[in-house]
Image 1 (cartoon, rainbow, N blue to C red):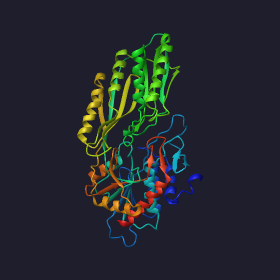
Image 2: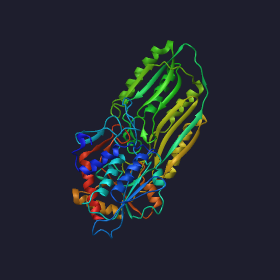
Image 3: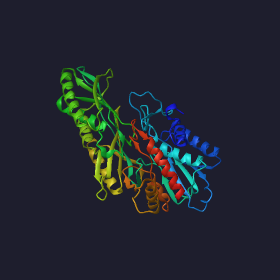
Image 4: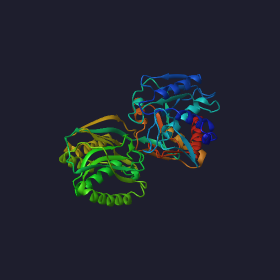
Length: 483
């Protein structure tokens, strides 16, 4: 265990978090972590079962006196979002997360930390491994592929779990209980295009937009964070109005559930216009920095000469593409009329790849209301009508309808009040939780989600608060003793 973290309290939960974070565990590449968790359960002498999807179930009998109580399901997901800063040299496929302590926070050096949902998984591991915690019968279910497709939760069979209460440990505010979550779907826009050669009086340049804050495309979507793809397109749109800009390639974003922080475009400018182009770009950069000084203070926009020379988009397709990207919905689509400060529907323009006469754009669309989500998908599709593009959907998952009056909510409110003297906030989250899927497979379950304070999830700025983790652990063990 790295020296700076070895003395954090409670030691057991940090130990398990460190062991987990030593293992590469990208979504859809969880083979190593599945075997690690399987060995963990078996080495404890606990019943350990893997289903056909790759989910792991570990059962632990109740402590004396709790045998007749309802079985409690503890649930977390094994995968994590793999994101790093552009200048960070790191191989997620072979390296464990490089963590350090910064005051009251644990962070990672230039990459995502994996507290989402690693700290929840570590807490469940600690419950399973510790003998002095009072608890009812436990079913610990570790799902896979939550971050990209939620295929682990979707693959659960109706007879795999028998508990009646489910505690999902995948929330990120320690003074709140989550009782609802948005559903979502990935939307992909595809088309082919014609390209052409340029005359010798053009030179190629790489336009780079980076340094943005980024973040979770659900829980951070209301913060007004800039989208690198939208910013890049805005710059290209401005340049295209001013002179004979030609676009060859665009690359931006790599995960549908992360707000894109970086985007690059390979462009061509006539040699006679390069000085004017730089002047226009300089003015645009100053304007965009001013607009984004609070949300994205480290925004950088640079233009470099490129040795790469390739075909460019036809002028007609280029004009249509820039107009389509400009009009494509991004960010909040609608707030929830019935709840304060809750986003009801949103879209994240997440990825673009334009090269070799093929265009692929991917979005992640969220809503608590399925019909409104479908309406937003239609708005996205309409934005790209000019391109005659194919629009496809995949990875759809249901929302979790909020209910603040269930038995488990009342119990956990009282336990929290006993510990802290006040009641926790009760809210729904504009992000996808597996609870929506689990509530459909197991409609009898009384479900709630909670966790410690995590900031910057899905970005290299992700941080886990140490004191909040201690608070979360104390609360979890008190809840288990009460149930």
